[in-house]
Length: 184
Ligand SMILES: Cc1cc2nc3c(=O)[nH]c(=O)nc-3n(C[C@H](O)[C@H](O)[C@H](O)COP(=O)(O)O)c2cc1C
Image (cartoon, rainbow, N blue to C red; front, side, top):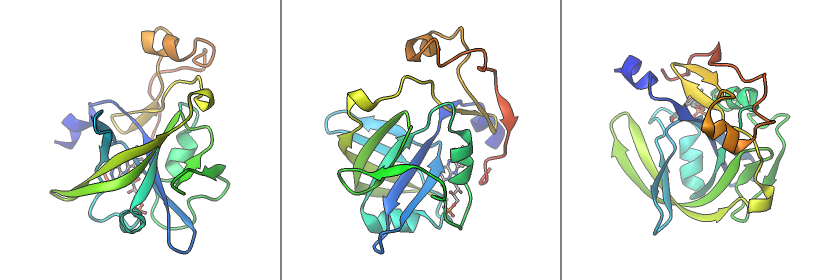
């Protein structure tokens, strides 16, 4: 099953929140998805074993930071357990207090609306309360995750052209620098 699922290409997001003591926390996810436009709902699936999820859950609000093609290292930093994942990371507080990662492709601030059982994962549903203002949106392509490796859109992709012909330059390669997803 893992092999079949690994062939479903996704973007990557970092879910962030602030702990009661003010320290930021976060985790990388590929399970982020839109759920509903009216009301505005999104979801992601934290593993029951995640040590970051209980902190996000306790905060009751979080931010979804959609990663851009040049944020692979940032993603790796948020895909480890323990340590200060925010070391060297540029961020600002959102309207709801959750950390918004600078240079993310888009950010969505959410209130935790529901948590549903999902086997060895949970399904966390968030109600979107704020979005990155349009003028702050970056013209860049997304970071992709496919078959346990990171990648970016190729230059001939219509989606890449729409994002930015200049940002998706000759650097754009196919899937590169394989890295096993820590939970896979
Ligand atoms: C590309 C990528 C996608 C991931 N997607 C998820 C996910 O959807 N759900 C999840 O629980 N963990 C996911 N992980 C693993 C978490 O990022 C990682 O287990 C977590 O940050 C570990 O730290 P924690 O114990 O602090 O939660 C993903 C990792 C990577 C590299």
